[in-house]
Length: 319
Image (cartoon, rainbow, N blue to C red):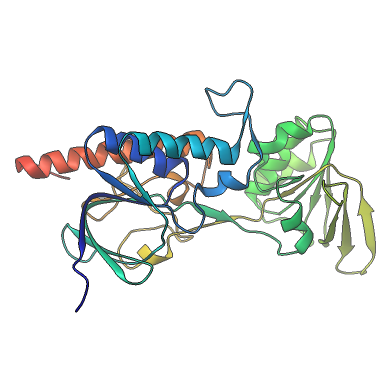
């Protein structure tokens, strides 16, 4: 005998600043939110050490601790936080929408808030994983401050890499860009900006062989992919800027996205193309990707969902 589907008023898929903020607002609106934390409970901030740019923490805070604060606040207000992974959805009909957790538990949700985030692309070398948070970072805006006056390296050749190198150049002593090909793919304007910045050096045809250091980053060994010559560069920070992948694959058959998988919302809202489904955080934001902006869109999604339910209950318009 199959399990009877669970009925939920407000289902939030994913945690992190967006999901937990949405839960806080939804709980205060008596929407009885249920959060499924997903593969990485707390989101990307759980692999971030010091957070110094989130308002309200004058002395800074560890990323995992901050996410625990967010979660505890959501729970205190009445959120049901569950460990589990949403593996399938069916948004083909009108609400309630069908969602499956871990391939078996079926949910009928009046509103669905997508806050599945985006994952940084990594090079895939062991030292990168070992030193992640100890000198290795995928966010210059988040972590650049810790390398003030120091030498850093950044991998990437697109606009994001160029923008982050430019940002780091204002803080760091020297920025070395490691570009795999013999040219950058960033826009001409961004290329000119980094080329004309005196403390940015661009190494073309250069790939990372190994990040050096036992407990913290002390340097990087690179290889010229034309000559095969290896060189060691002393650096204190190693930034990876080769892009992000939004965690939105399970929604692609129903939700409108851009060519890279970021969810497209209606202007000035968190509303997707599917009635009763809202998106927040890095799953929809490929520009800012900050904890504070993610939290802001989480608030938007909860308010939009609350208004949607109120309009539905009163028989009003829900567009």
